[in-house]
Amino acid sequence: MRHIHKSGPIITHCSAGIGRSGTLICIDVVLGLIGQDLEFDISDIVRSMRLQRHGMVQTEDQYIFCYQVILYVLKRLQVEEQQRNS
Image (cartoon, rainbow, N blue to C red; front, top):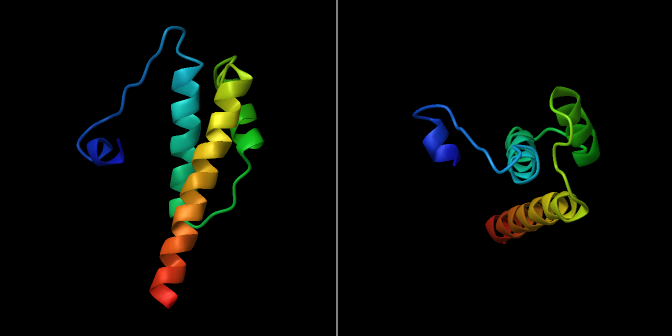
């Protein structure tokens, strides 16, 4: 998705445009912050998104998925860093 973004805008939409789309957008925002080595708080990001569009990240499962994906990414980055330092 980020590779495509370099050649034009990303358009994402699900049924209501807030659940799955909100989940994808939240994850993308956090990945961008991780890439810049900045601090983040997923709940603050979702809260901010909901100020712009009510109901973003619609279900508990979607909210949990955001955390799971970010945890997976952070663990992978940690392993890669440990391998470089070995």
